[in-house]
Length: 288
Image (tube, rainbow, N blue to C red; front, side, top):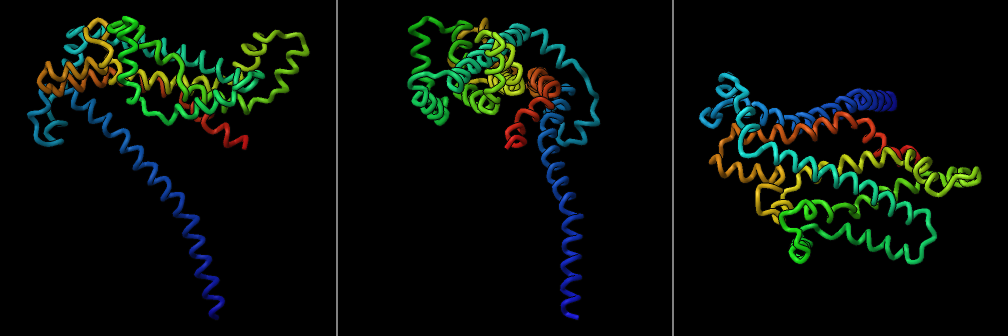
């Protein structure tokens, strides 16, 4: 009888575990999704109200009249279009350069019989442990000596290739069978043809992940654009929003409108490439 009761209790526990564990996981994921979406939704709600700081509760804010005047005034004031263009230009050029150069360096380390590439690889891994803020003073002095302060070159050139980009492409290229390249060479393909017609298409998921990550990092970058620019002609959007906050004396409606506009390219980029990002990030797990 005791054995039967024990077996029954064990069966009930397994049944409850199999039934409620997926619900628990889904509940945790739902809470995480709400925690991520809630700040974005709050930002949009605040941006659609005139003088939102005068409302003392969420109910009063939501029930108040909604307006898009904050967006209209933000887009037409303080050279917002120029700041937006600067951010698009800097983030796009850095992204393209990072993908190209990181892919080239990673391919050389993976496939080329180069002397000292082990030392180069160890150096790249070591650079991943160096905080970017440590480079702040040396980079600023270098830009001053080159005469690049208040230029697009200071915002673009130092980030055209990054240790993380090389590491990501290196690890992905290791998963591509070398036999495909050897077969192409046996068929008479040149080295450039092998790189651009065989390896590059196969590495496209990793390139897209690197491109999205690089664009997002440079689009939201504040410290170095703030440090390397002194005038409005080369100022990017995150830096402009910080100054806009001071000019408007914490005008939350206009500030949230500007932040909402700044967040749109990132959200659109993720929506367009989310499937490719998930595929690339899980490729190693599926192959392993």
